[in-house]
Each structure stands twice: as C-alpha cells, then as structure tokens.
Amino acid sequence: MHCFALSLMFTGTDMALFTASQTMEFQKSKFWESGMASEGSMSMLSNRMCSHAKRWRELICMGAPCLAQAAGVPILKPLSRGCRSGVSACSLSLEVMEMDHTFGFQTAVEEAQRSLLAAKVEATSGLRGIGLVKLMGRQSGFIAMQASLASGLVDICLIPEEPFDLEGDHGLLAYIERVMAYKGHCVLCCAEGAGQNLLQPQDGSPRELDPSGNVKLKDIGIFLKHKIRQHFATSPTAGGPVDLKLIDPTYMIRTIESGQQDSIYCKVLAHSAVDAAFAGYTGICVAQVNTHFAMLPIPVITKYPRRVDPLGKPWTRLKADVQQPPLHK
Image (cartoon, rainbow, N blue to C red; front, top):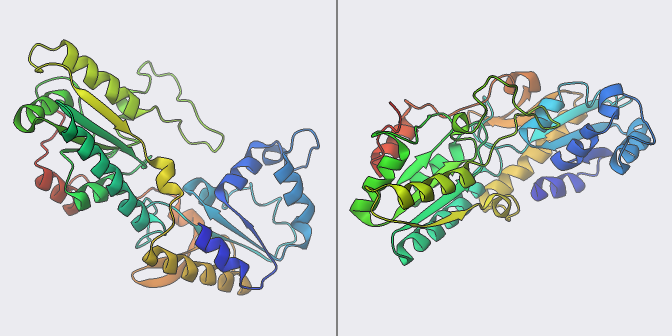
C-alpha cells in the first residue's frame, strides 16, 4: 500500500488518491446516501473530498475488495463530478477474479509463516500444547492454504470453502484428539471466514451487515479456543486439559513492509494506473493477467469472488501433505 502511494506521488500528476480506510469513512456519512454534502453529517474527510472534487482531473482509489466494488457504484459518482476519469487500483487478497495475483499476497503469506512458527514453538514447549493461528480470508482461504503449505508446520487447516463439523467421529474435535494422542501437540491454521455456519444464527434471522454491506463475521478463533478447551477438559476420551494458545497476526501482517517482488509489482501497478487515467479510461482496475498488465472492468472482477477449489490440486496437495481427512460427514 505504501509503495503504491509513493509511486503515485512521484508521477507528477494532478490526481486524488484515497486509501480503503479513508473511502470507508466517506461511505459512512450521509453523503453516501443522498449525494449532497451536509455540514452536520459529514466527516472531516468527506468535507475535504467534496471541496476539492471539482478541480481533480483524475481519481485513483486503492484498497480492499469493498473499495473496488464501491468504485463501480454511486459512492464515487458524486465525488468524481468534473473529473476526467476515475481509476481503481486494487490492493486485495487473492480472492479477485481474472488476476494472476494481487499485490501484498506474497508478503502476507511470508509473514503468516512466522505466526505459524510461533504457534509451533508454543505448542511443543508446553505439556499437551495446541497452537491456533487465525489468518485473513473472509470468503477464501488462499493465505491460510499457501502459508500452511509453505511452512510445513500445520496439522489442520480450515478454510471457508470446505465446511467442517465439530462433533462426531469425523469432526474437528475428534481429529484433534487423534493428533494429540500421536504427536503430543497440534498446530491449527484457520481463515477468519471458516466455520461461519457454526456461528451464524440458525433461526433464519438476517445476518448483521457492516457499513460496506458485507456480513459481519463472528470470531472463529475465540469460538474454537473455547470449544477445544471445553472438550478436552470434560471429555473422558480426550486425555486431559490442553494448553491452547491463540495467535491473531492480522494487523501485524497488514502493516509489514512489503517484500521485493510485491514492491516492484506495486510500482508497476501505480504506473499502469496513471497511464490508464491519462488515456481516459474510467471504472477499471489495473492488474496482471496471464503475465501481462491489463485493465479490467470493475463490475467484471467484483461479480464473483475467487475461491479455493475444494477438489483442486492446491487444496488436495495441502491435505495430502498434512494428512488431513475430511472433517465433515
């Protein structure tokens, strides 16, 4: 993210650049609902954006999937009046369609391995230790899958694409029992969107949404921590209590300095975004597609999320590597 911003600063263009957090603050105001500036309802950022919007020539947005989606709907239409073009340059996880990869993904996987190593050390340092790491991944488990495969330290990996059961002979708790009986410790890696079917209300009531329209996820890390501790403390076949450590490195990963490949990739994306804006393109996202840098229409890449194929080679390869069986009936 910082590399992208710095690259744009040195292009010498008269452009407006906003990150995901700034645009989300703008979205929360009533300006998002009415398209008109209100002194009492708009934040300081919104007032600043509106006051300068008329003299902007190009508008470049960067950030999370919600930002790329917002760039294609009216959130930016009142803002970009008078602008020649608006270009969205995504900094997303690998859950975006059509792209080879998105910037920051390789750095995130590299940093996630440090957390898995810490969980392994914690699990093996104590008596009957369990290390539980919760990684980013609302709709897809690419980071959790790739980090688990690269580290070689994980016994169980949980992703949103493959559901799992807690109870029963084929459930998660029973399999943790078998791993603990065989190795004496266990390391779990789960994406934040995994197991949401166990946490969301089952009475048919609507799910709670955040200001961007995404479903608010329940904390799968705390849920698993409570359930695992409770199971091993009460089950007669579990072998006794366990020493469980929960590690959530989400914000440490997001704020880490990007690696060499991601830094170069960010710079090339920044230059491509500026070139696209000067060429007059709007409502597009610059990305690498089939090893070539291309401009993709935002509605196309946000129509469906890219997800891990539960029957595909990467996920099958990981399950074979860690010897993880199906955890559901």
